[in-house]
Image 1 (spheres, helix red, strand yellow):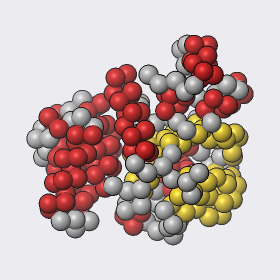
Image 2 (cartoon, helix red, strand yellow):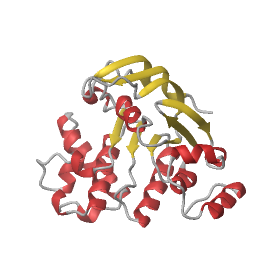
Image 3 (cartoon, one colour):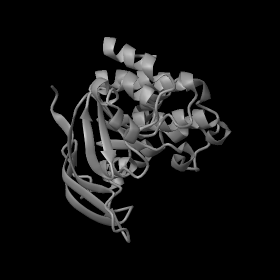
Image 4 (cartoon, one colour):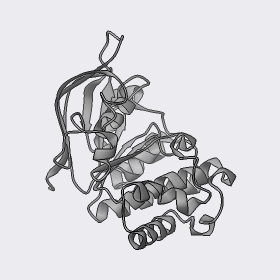
Length: 265
């Protein structure tokens, strides 16, 4: 078992002017080189946890933090989003909200954060080319980001995260705007990244995708840890998926394939 690269201990977060905590005494440890899915109903705390681990709380989203958290040996609570970029990057479900608006080309957008960090130009070119190829959008390198479809924009934003090359990548419902082939390709990409030692954390509602690609599933409910284990165990237990995510269209077939071994589209 690899050592934990992401940990929380008694982690609590309450947004300003809200009485109910979004995260409540959450203690978890996530091993390096794994794909961990976080599921739960609306308001369970999935997006809050993703944002906090990336350094958004309490610097960007104001509130009160209790307990501790570490990502790649650094506290996201004490740092900032910029300071956390070498350690963790988050990709949101709405790609349009993560486009800078100042770059004329897809390649420029993918390398934008690297340029702001002062990374050498040759390194930027290499990383951008690799990230574009990984997301299979090299042919879009010179196109305007605003001429892309929603799915293409999502691939571009993910490529920008990959170009930063952090050890931890967080995805908040990344499949929301992707077509089925791209959803499957994204899962395969995450598995390949995990095989190279990257740690992938995915907040996702589609349990068929979770069953196919996650090593581990964490179920949140009302900001608390509800269940934690391999997908075969978590999704096979109805109380978990009823409170955790959207039921696959063919649960019985998926369940049978899981019992025989992990399903992969």
